[in-house]
Image (cartoon, rainbow, N blue to C red; front, side):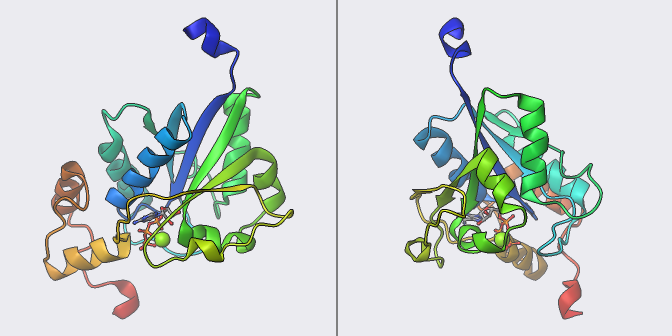
Length: 208
Ligand code: ATP
Ligand code: MG
């Protein structure tokens, strides 16, 4: 089997995000695309210094929570690539580094929620993204994927419908702040980490 596989292109899913914190919406999306597109693996790539928004938990904590969430899950992996780069992190730059690392017999599938894909035209260095990857847009409650319009300038976009999980990291942070449960919305180990490190319990900076 390994001999047969070695001639095939490897298909690698890449899931970028702030993961502040990682939750079941991210994990179900990655799992659905892993199976739906017969990917070899999915690499979760927490953003170091997100250019479109700020994060609340420090990058190293977000990386730790992501690692805890995928530990022991077959075909899920985590990369700290974006944490170790200074300055704003663009998906295109990360894809270039991944392409260097994995070599030429790889196809990348960028996994992104409907909200992110509807913003696709605002992404930086879109030509690079288009050259290196295809995008898999996963459905997300509240974001109408059918409003997305493909164009030759944009990367190729596939659509994957997944069970609707109406949860966001913003809501998880809000729940922690209000003392409401986050059980089953994030993996158990992530809930422990948040409690142990006192993440998200202080009032949000923007409302202070
Ligand atoms: P925040 O509320 O802080 O923006 P988030 O829940 O949107 O957090 P991100 O880290 O911003 O999480 O998202 C990373 C990727 O995962 C994005 O492409 C986003 O669209 C997708 N995603 C997040 N939550 C879901 C969900 N519930 N269903 C489908 N896709 C999701
Ligand atoms: Mg988001």
